Image 1 (cartoon, rainbow, N blue to C red):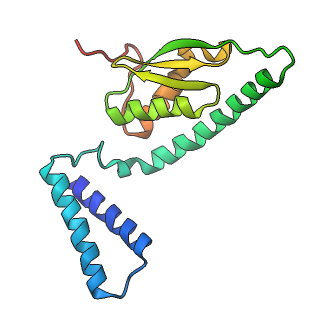
Image 2 (spheres, one colour):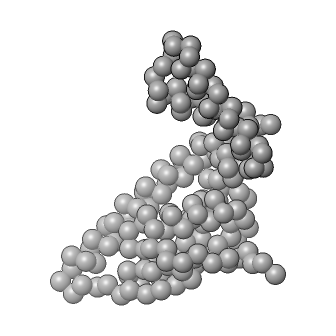
Length: 169
């Protein structure tokens, strides 16, 4: 019920923001009906959960984005120095970074964060890790991604245990 209410309020606010109609009853009726229809479909599909309705974690996610922006700036400087140096000090490599997130949205947030960081690209997602292409040797240490993994999981409401990577079996 909590997730249905949050999704309903979010959809209504989004619809009102995009449409701009606050005083035409027929159009407001259609907006209400579209929100109710979407809620009905979501309930029937049994997808009203914290992963489908992550709006509860918006403050955490925004604070994570501030931290990630700082990391992107630092990586940008490192990549620019390496690429612009006369010796062209790049050393591409592939590494497997373990994931500790329980949910698909947590793993996706982590993999996207890796890709957003200059010099690294998430190449493949596996059950227990992300295959990452790193442009520089200093970016190719899987342990350096631990904080990003913890923070990305926290941003979507997960309590991350980094002692062992998640595996099925």
